[in-house]
Amino acid sequence: MSKEKNNKLTIFSHLIELRSHLIKAMIAIVICTLISFAFARYVFEFLLIPAPDTLNPIYTEMTGFISIYMKVALMGGLILSMPVLVYQAIMFVSPGLSRQEKNYVYIAMPWITIMFLSGVAFTYYIMVPPVINFLLTWQGFSIFGSDTSQIAKPMITIDNYISVVTRFIVAVGIVFETPVIITFLARIGVVKSEWLASKRRWAIVLAFVLAAIITPTFDPINQSLVAAPIIILYEMSIWLAKIASKKRAEAEAEA
Image (cartoon, rainbow, N blue to C red; front, side):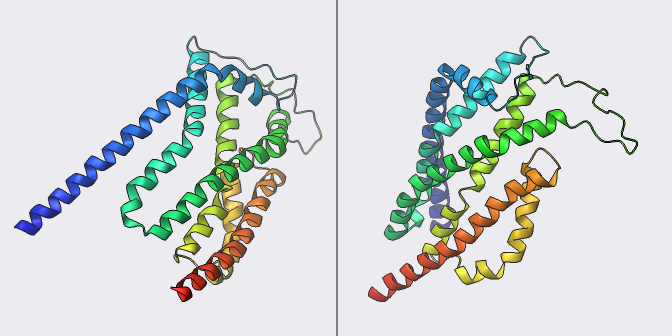
């Protein structure tokens, strides 16, 4: 009976601790969202730079622009608060990590941010312009060679444009964190470079599946532009996992 009572107390204490971390994370999101709200106009202008000059976004509802303005502010708040969110997640699981594993997490934290921003920059400067151009200019095809551009004229809402671009940018940014995550898992002994290398073929297939999901177009050129860096990142992960596993083995030998 005492053991059952202790288990209940342990679960209850974990829930209290989880609530504490969630509250701190929510406070960070709110503060960062307010900061982002003050600069949301500049974010709009930045996201519209890749769009062609002929694109004049519209909104069709009275609350349409306010709604997307808040979405941009919230997304900016989530990105700005990401280090705090990661830190709170680490603090919650830290009792189950060894001291050495905690050090690995702290080392990985800045690299998570760096790789995410690298993915954002790659998407914004390399991927977004051709994707927008394809989506706005493609009007189908005709086997008789007739002009299909007269079927419909694009009238893009600002909500739709911002949603497509931001989802695309954030998705690729998250994918770019793959080497950091795999390196950490290899450092704590969860995965090995040999296992990753043996799954290379499946990784390539998965890269193109992810590219098809992430890319808002169905043309193979744009999808290949997304799949290529995913494959390169996976190969980088194998190399980094090999180094991490070697360092782990050396540390265990010294201990």
